[in-house]
Length: 441
Image (cartoon, rainbow, N blue to C red; front, side, top):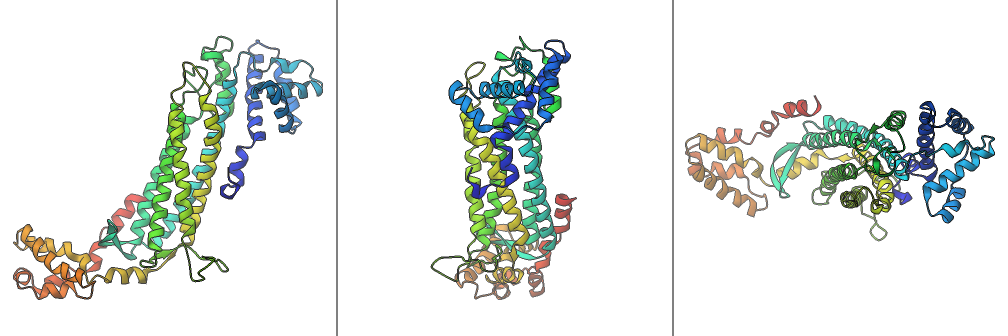
């Protein structure tokens, strides 16, 4: 992973030493349970845990050196552990490790632990983001701004409503991630081709309980990769939501709009050539990171179709996407939280932008009022549009209200007072409280 876009806690979860520690826990728990069942001596599990209690440093270089000869990572690890246990005075006890197990039991269960722990961090990230969005939404609950469709002025909304939408979306993301964690947090200790021929299912159940996992109903030697496909697809959806909010900020920061912008810190520089520049670099960066996170979903989907009971075509893929997707998403969520917390918001510019088109944003209310006054919808649309286009072509220099007041066909149905009432901005915000109650409870 690129260190520039990685945070220490999430990165540490994917370091080789952290992985090897989980490997040991799986092997030691399984050996301990086998001892309780009388399959191996009880001294074997005790020896492993006693040695482990000395908190040995995992010698990653030594394990890698053994793997250079064995060309097998799990065997290299087991060999190194056995050497350490023997050297600590528990001679021969380590030979009972891995009884009836296969490499995938260790590798797949470890990946499940790592992804579950990574997800716990991501859920914390989402909670922080949701809290930040809620704070700013309540701050700008009734701050008027223009709603846009197709990038064009539509009707008034509030900036709080924009943020409430983002909150609701990320709240759904959180629900999906909780479901994805449950989907991925499964343990397989079922032996070659998953039949439990040489290891009892009770061992799997015990290991799963100790590691906070559920058992895989049928593992076929590997945990089915539809689980992983669902998990990484969920991360991709969250990335899409990150980009949605990031793109909104990027648009609002455009010079012609400038209704909100990223915080620009003292001493910050926007351009090596143009000293005046204040660029939306954080949200542009988030767009790029979202693209990468979404890209990891496709290989996860392609991993589903493994040969028969297993192959390892998925293995190299997951060595990339497991760390990269979770580390990148962790960084992106934290970055977006910072953007929201420090976002500079300009209500006066929002109002001036809304007023710039001569009241066109109120056209629908006039249309509806004309129909309610007895004018056909087709004629009402024609009357409002012909005046609205004059305002549009004047680039907002003309006033829609004044043009409508001067249109005899319009005033035959609506008085000046009735027309003026249709240009009341507050009308559009009468259900903001209802929407907020739906979103925030």
